[in-house]
Image (tube, rainbow, N blue to C red; front, side, top):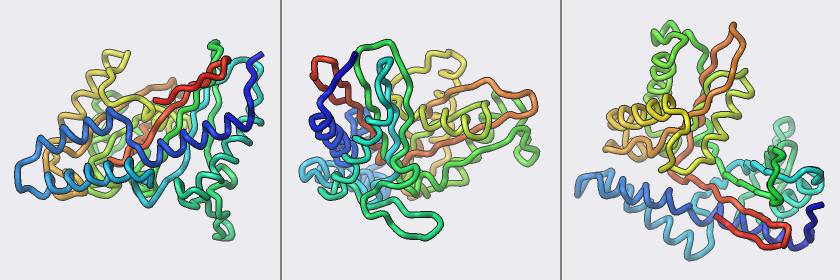
Length: 295
């Protein structure tokens, strides 16, 4: 059976949190650099991207949060058969509280009934942890930090949508996604990355959308129809001219990632999980030997 040292794993999880909060992944930085070069000299958009890149450099050098809103901590954890989810949840929560002490995270967990902040970023449903079992003899922790601004412009549509003339087909899906980004404008700290969930029920559709955000920006969807839709949407959304922070420009989104689920005949949901330019996600693999690697 897979075994691990709890104290060592807690420290490894703390490092995962530090990386997620302070060091953007390579694919995200390269996408922002490309967007910077794609804007005209002297434009507001080029200036904004320049400031974003400087922010990224300083955060990495000083191990300080990239954004003052360190966001909801969302974990996708893959575990071997027989491993205790309860014990791993305890370690993640302990590492989260320590990350607040070290100022990698802001105390973000507020009781919705009383308005009281827990003070350590831990509370009911915080951090959010989703476990899945797999056949590998390793544990994989995927962590994403999703800020409140981009979460506020995330949304869900129910097809058909008469106002948008959007039917229950891929053309209808296309129309509501265009509408969502157009409605968001610069809110949510554009340029955004979109995770899309097609189908399912209201809950599973949102979960499918968020899960898509664990994909890397340059990858290609395994489903050729969805790959084609992702490419089309990215091109057309960037023609909206919203640009970084809504200042106008050539890059309104850096990527579109789409997943689909079976649904009831009576329902057709399309969920849009909008991620800001501070696309904070990292992963960690723990082998049974104790060796750990981060990505």
